[in-house]
Image: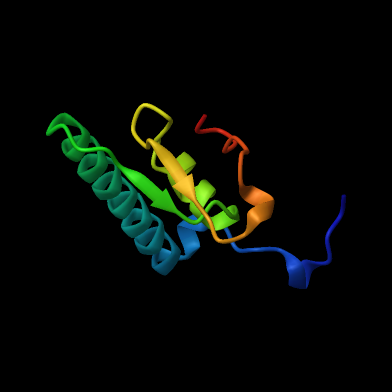
Length: 88
């Protein structure tokens, strides 16, 4: 696919603000993973709220799975009884 020039992003090296943002996201995902795993190691059960796209994506990006998160809850009944992609 050939995208118009105005739609193309500059190379990542040309955007230190994006690099800082990416590093911050990585740091926060690591913090989430460490918090959940520390809680599990202390004998706690960890549950999540929000089985929609952002919640599931956050768990997957943090490297968390069913051994880390006991279950997910969501008000939306369409998500009840389903497995979370990439984390089940």
